[in-house]
Image (tube, rainbow, N blue to C red; front, side, top):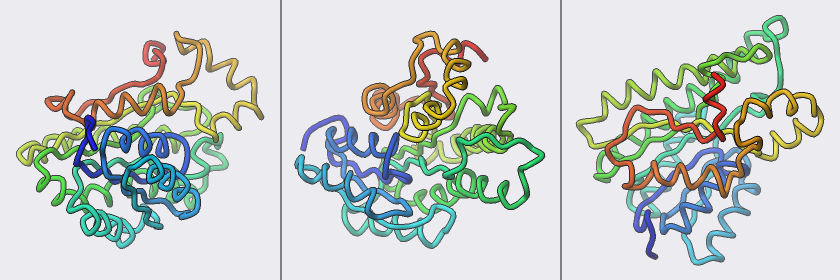
Length: 256
């Protein structure tokens, strides 16, 4: 296949639906071999089958990003199937991360569960993928953050905390891995995923409050607005950029 990512292999966590599925689909169209990892095999297999039907190559691995053993298994599967990993993307998020939860009701178990997916998940993927990213000669490590990591979120302190922590982690890895030729970047989307759409349908007042903060007055489409931006980070168009956060948010960053 030809394309911006021809011959490269992308390992994407949380690729069953939403942004993860969009990334897998768009990357495959640009020639990448795709390996997805998610807790549910059935959901991600639908994306993989669509990729295969279009002539692409895709492998699914069932696993939990909070488990280093599971992440290592996904990396090994990518190496076995395609001879390495050149792009690693942490998209997996906790299922309750988009639900309001104030500090009074945020117990330690919930704090640990949500931080494990975002922070430990990023750590596990970074540790497991680093040797293969370095070997590839064009390593790209990418993770999803949020503008709430900068602005804070009065209705969800754990979400804001872990998303903010990712910036320090990404900047540190960018410095550490520079000699290996690996770029490390984050993207911060305002995306109308299925979970976001459902939440706004249940809480229309939340959308009416959020909409004015986006100059383009709409949430981004995962396939049309978000995935193509991440594609640029993963390819060679921005090969000299590292340690940065790219806001794919319709201008929401201007409100911070």
